[in-house]
Amino acid sequence: MDTHSALYHRCKSRLAELRETAPRQTVTLDEKLKENGITRREFMTWSASVTALLALPLPFTNLVAEAAELADRVPLIWLHMAECTGCSESLIRTDTPNLDSLIFDHISLEYHETLMAASGWQAEENLEHAMEAYKGNYLLAVEGAIPTANNGAFLTVGCKGHTGMQIVKEAAEGAAAIISVGTCAAFGGVQAAAPNPTGSKGVQDVIDKPVINLGGCPPSEKNIVGTLMYFIMFGKLPALDMFNRPKWAYGARVHDNCERRGRFDAGEFVETFGDQGAKDGYCLYKVGCKGPYTYNNCPTERFNHHTSWPVLAGHGCIGCSEPNFWDDMADFEKPLGRQLLHGVDATADTIGAVILGATVVGIGAHAVASLFAKPLEE
Ligand code: FSX
Ligand code: SF4
Ligand code: F3S
Image (tube, rainbow, N blue to C red; front, side, top):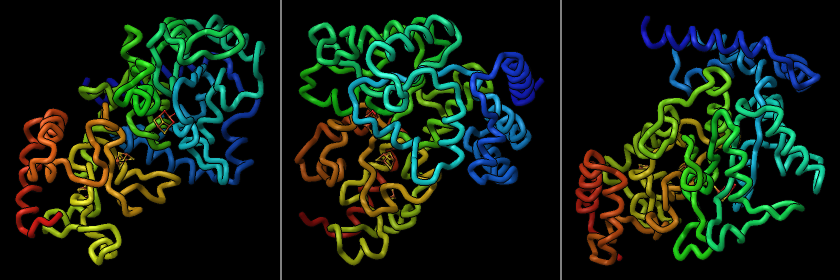
């Protein structure tokens, strides 16, 4: 049996098992699609795009569709820690619900502080009940970093005054899989930026179970929904990179799929924001784009119903899906390599090189060569 056919059969039996369990929504996905004027054809197109996103062959499209319909069989607990809630915002776009937000709406969301109606004691009770009733079976999504200094006291949540650290540890124990949604939950994010007075850390650093990290501040709705779909379909973790990010989403650099890459290769750079090069869509490397050091699918998947992404909007990538990007990728509007060339910040490029590894250092050298092709001013 080859890998894909093994995966296909694994998925089929997982879905058959899920079908045996009781739905936790009163309205089926089909009814929800009709209510929102989404045709079966559009739904199947969406299923095909998720199949491609997850780097699965086309025959998986029907299984993606079936998994979406069965999303209400998988209990999901979503915790908020120290963060801005932008990750939830990225997913739950309320102006025009699209298929990604509908699927999220259809999943059996047992607890989500931003979305649930309950508050206070009732909310605490809902969380405790969900952790007890679905022990060993629920999916745990965590958004935000975990403050650990002073025994976690910088983040206390709810009427019982538990720390975020206590809540995450407890919820992680009974989880079938754990997803860190966003750079804060994955790596600490802005909360962990130097001097990090709250001792903020990513989830993986406070618990000792495997965690799927979805880097990005915020991650795209596609990467969140794709990860949920993968778990519904296979009930296991996808292939992960060295920072435990799914390879299907974080396997390529932003730079590799950027629409301005031809400009980079031709040595055509924006020198200052608003110059003629900026108007002509030149490469943003010299004004600080960190696309060459950043692994994410932003150029291909984009954000907000596929409308745009940072570089398309005219600003360089700031490396938001990488660990420690607030410290390591700064200055956001100056290139790391260029600072090294000027002897301003020798450590910045060393850090870049560590992130990138040997192959990419070669490309960094290419960028430096391009820089020399034009006079360096500053
Ligand atoms: Fe962090 Fe998500 Fe950035 Fe914000 O909550 S990844 S600050 S977009 O919202 O955690
Ligand atoms: Fe695109 Fe940035 Fe790479 Fe230029 S440096 S090609 S703008 S990702
Ligand atoms: Fe973040 Fe860069 Fe994508 S800033 S959103 S990883 S383009």
